[in-house]
Image (tube, rainbow, N blue to C red; front, side):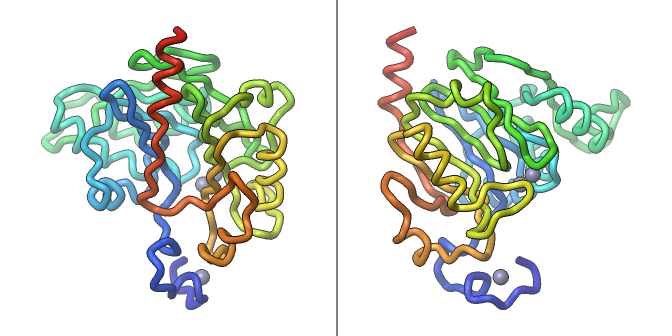
Length: 248
Ligand SMILES: [Zn+2]
Ligand SMILES: [Zn+2]
Ligand SMILES: [Zn+2]
C-alpha cells in the first residue's frame, strides 16, 4: 500500500508484494485474461505473458480495468482484435471511461483494438464453455467466471442463491478474501472458508489479499485444501480441461 510502513508492506518476502488481482488462463493454445488490472504492464513483463486472445471482465472498478490500454501491445504483435466480455454494466462503463479506444476517427498513435460483448449466460470461447457467475460485490452486481472445472470469483461479498449451483464439482476455485475482518464489499477470510466448505472444490486459492494478510503467517493456518495466492503463482489444470474436452 502506498506510504505504508507496516510489516507486510516492508516485507522482503516476494509473496507479500502484490500486484492487483488478475489471472491468465491458458487452454487450447489460447490465453484468456481475467480483467486488465492497473498493473497489467508490469505483470505482463515480469511473468512474460506471451499473448492475450480474449479478456473476461468481472466488473468496472479501477483496479480491474485500468490496464486496458496495455492490450494494444498484444494487438500490435498479433495484428488482430481482442474480444472482451462482461455484463452490460462493465461494457457500458468501459466504453464511457475509455472513449478514446472506441473513437472511430483516424489516430497517429496506436490504441487498443477491441470488440466488446455483453454476456448474460454461457458462451463458447476457443472451444471452451465459459459460464458467467453472477455475484454481489457490496451492492454492485459483478461476474465471476467458470471455465471447465475452474472458477474465478474475485470481488465478491455475497453469492446469490441461483449462482451456487454453477459452482459444484470444481477442481479449483480462486476466491476473494480481502482480510481477516469483515468488509462491506469483499469476503473476509472466514467468509471465504465458509464458501469453500459449501462448494467443496478440490483446491481453493484466496486472492485480492490486502496488507492485513502476512503470507506465511496466514497461509500456514488455512485448512486443506485452501491456500493463499501470490504473484506469479502457476496452477496446472490440464487434467480437468482434458476431461471436459473428451466429455463434450
Ligand atoms: Zn501496509
Ligand atoms: Zn471491485
Ligand atoms: Zn478489486
